[in-house]
Image 1 (cartoon, rainbow, N blue to C red):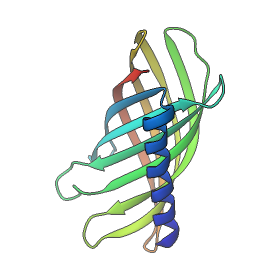
Image 2: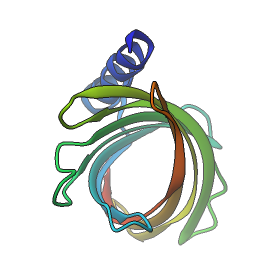
Image 3: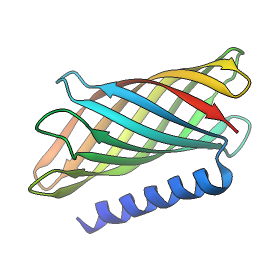
Length: 153
């Protein structure tokens, strides 16, 4: 529980730092997993080199019965821009907070997708995140398929 809380605090801090100071882009996404769980996420990204980005994502479940589930992750993304496409892949770590009875869990993620640069400061993206969640109840894993839009600064 303490480890998941520490990871969640770190992810929130990175999200705040990248959005407030260093953000190269910020966006919103809607996603679904194979069980029908719907997520709405906010994300920020900043370049740490020409080929690597740092991403922070905070997502909330909006499905009935699981509303209140929160995921906070931080990932390193490798990308190769090929205008107007920008494919990416990465890995990260984070935390999940589940609704009553409230419990926390460590989350590991692998992500892959593509950004489509529509205009200089606006783009769309589609991605798949594979989340592995570990808690005192054991390990669960599965994909989340997401799409959204972002603004570049």
